[in-house]
Length: 271
Image (cartoon, one colour):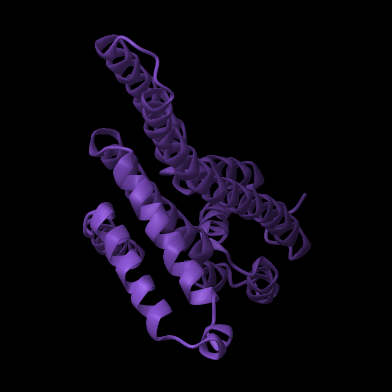
């Protein structure tokens, strides 16, 4: 279910970005905006100009500027960076949903397990763990499943299955870290190639014109800007996922130690 939800969110993001970058030519937009502005200045009175809100115009111009800068960066490197953003967001959304579903109230779970162990009902405690989502409940279930073999078997089962659950929690983080490293690299590569093209243009012209140099460098640096933006967004999600995994792991270890103490306290096996 969580993977389906992540795919739907990614599909929505792809649709949004496709509509975002498939707009009309920036020059045509600029001329159209200039014509509209001139017409508005002709028919608008000073009182209406003072009453008109400026915030929507600023927001629209900001979105338009971002779209124009993206197009100016060139499709050769902007499309891979956009693909990294979509792929990274899909992985991050899946991890966030998974980790939030894996979070469980371990105190409440241990209370239910303790109530069953006080009555000597190990199978009842196992059913409680089986019906509860999350890695902590799965680890406790594996421990209770090996109660008949003694405390050493319980601890060994908890440690072994805890490692398995850790691997499941960290699944996908390696790909998120790859996106974090790859997006700026693609941006830097586009910048270097853009600089080479700018110097080739200077060589063809035979003169160092400020217009040629500034325009080429500006377009070349846009790929780095968007690559760094993607890396920053992915880094925030990555750090959130790591902190969430650390919290789940600490609760899982704490509940495992508490389970062994409960088994001894309820005389399931003696010390």
